[in-house]
Image (tube, rainbow, N blue to C red):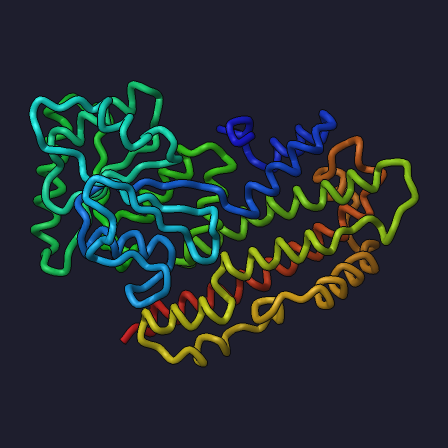
Length: 379
């Protein structure tokens, strides 16, 4: 399903599916986005930097339940698994470092650890890239796997000058082994909003199949205001899918029941949004703890009731209000958004679209305020 949308605008791809009467494809896409099914492998020596990186990718601190410990309980040659507490189908896999032995067969390492099963692989290191790791990277490229990335993990002892020297030396290693497109991302494990991680995320979104890219964005913590904006756009695609299903159902010649608006789908989407945008109580408290702030200060920034609690009562109220206000919505806008075969059902489609988009805008505004306060108020 995911590969169908690679390289396409997600909403346009979903519209095409609706045009071709492939409602099941739209439902599959919606489910993929709701559960954020994605698997990321993290290769490298186990230690404080790698553990901190895997925790930060899930918005966790070292003291949080489910966090990866700096001293891994996993046997040196085994794989460790770390699901995201909020998004269980978003999983990080802790792979052992690439052996330094010579001769070395990259295929053997990749086969042993099922390298190609992962949506993306982070090849982490804390000094300089080793030759065998480059061999694995080149073998992955030969198998058409583009989502493998070299990441230099900074430690607290490193100076900026020292890190730049190691990054430059690693790029020279890549050049000497014939890597044409050479990239090394410098990442501070406990501060992903800094250094090269935003650029890495941008490249991943381009490289991954469309559905997986959106799933990744929805699963990551709200590291920066920019990421909040990207999440909001992903939710707009998810909402379009839900509204299309509602509109598509309404286009079927059977008696309509409450405009066929499925409020349970709306509850799932907005619950996902609350967790993804990190505006729920637990996420706000964790963020405050990580930035040494008072949780109450961040919680008070929430003005949307759905940021605090997602309830069916509130969602039904918003859906009813949206349906009542349909007369103010541009018919041209509906015509552009709705697939041709479902335009007769535009009332149900538009009510869902308007109500959920408005809710996402409000929740995202809360998230932006919270992230800005956390990043700007660090002690």
